[in-house]
Length: 413
Ligand SMILES: *[C@@H]1O[C@H](CO)[C@@H](O)[C@H](O)[C@H]1NC(C)=O
Ligand SMILES: *[C@@H]1O[C@H](CO)[C@@H](O)[C@H](O)[C@H]1NC(C)=O
Ligand SMILES: *[C@@H]1O[C@H](CO)[C@@H](O)[C@H](O)[C@H]1NC(C)=O
Ligand SMILES: *[C@@H]1O[C@H](CO)[C@@H](O)[C@H](O)[C@H]1NC(C)=O
Image 1 (cartoon, rainbow, N blue to C red):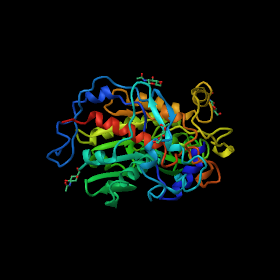
Image 2: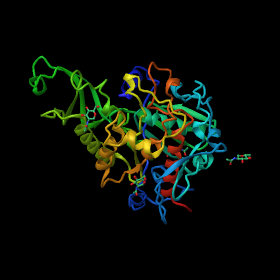
Image 3: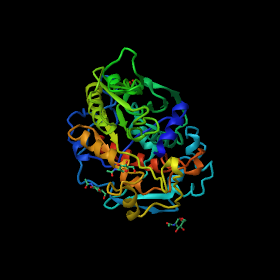
């Protein structure tokens, strides 16, 4: 897996962390949500002082995942922010690292077939979401998206306080607007840690297990357990780490699932564990978030290793987005290629979120095309980074989609 050694490195460096998001908005289910308390977007403070939201009526909806990338040299994405934004992790700063196509990456514009996706206006956003806390909860891909949002806002509003709200890895308050955005780092959502056989024996020991990772399917990782009561808008992801055999080696260091403090016997494979974790974490969020909180799950971000996985010399050398045919070749479940986990993860997500009041931010389809938009050899690692995204770049479009989505469910006075 391309991601795993990158992730292993990241776990060594606290500066590196993880981020999340997805692409189809279940707008209808959101606009039906009764839990959105009423409040205007201009006054907008409940008794608790928190900003609350209410959906507006939607007439007609657009499938934002159904579209194509169009090269537009005049596109303004490059003006959102530039390589001087300090929050950009070094390996993602493709302009600074002189990736040859870096200046072109933000000039590709996603064009849904039946509507437009506009670059969001940061000043309007700051104004609309003042007195609001927004939390990104997940792996480094959600951090990538968080950084894009931060840099876009910082470009127009310089006064920020850097701090770590509610256990966050990093966070900022835009002081003029009292808008806080934070990134809560968590790889599996659930709490996990090293496990070794107990000399006194036990059920896992009896089955021959010696080393592994204990994953508590019903316990949220401490980095975000308090995020649900702090934020007004939550954006979750998880995915890459579930298919990361270099860390969670099925033989040498398997994931060992625990529920209610007891090992799950017989032990189950990661894909089954993922279902359990999703179920419990969705329940936890529902239980602990205030009513009116907007809960979003981002779909899986695709990788683009070609010619082998990350540890087999795989690379992503393309200068342009893929054709639809090539996308199928790379990602179809039928072909079971190197990067197939993206669609597999999504199957688990959609199943787990069925019937919940999370909305789904589907970034998968639009991202599948963007084999050109990874740091690749400019990522500064021994192998190509075909997992994270150059900044500025693709996750700017994810945020356009997010903001479109949020605006759709805001009251319009
Ligand atoms: C939206 O478009 C994508 C891509 O064409 C398609 O896979 C998906 O099924 C569509 N979603 C809906 C709800 O029609
Ligand atoms: C881009 O802008 C320039 C100057 O305004 C204009 O001449 C050119 O036709 C534009 N190109 C496209 C593709 O819109
Ligand atoms: C800032 O926003 C937070 C979160 O909504 C709220 O609790 C707090 O009262 C606000 N502070 C001010 C000074 O308005
Ligand atoms: C897909 O490929 C992987 C590794 O190449 C293999 O281990 C797995 O069994 C394959 N899965 C299916 C369903 O063919």
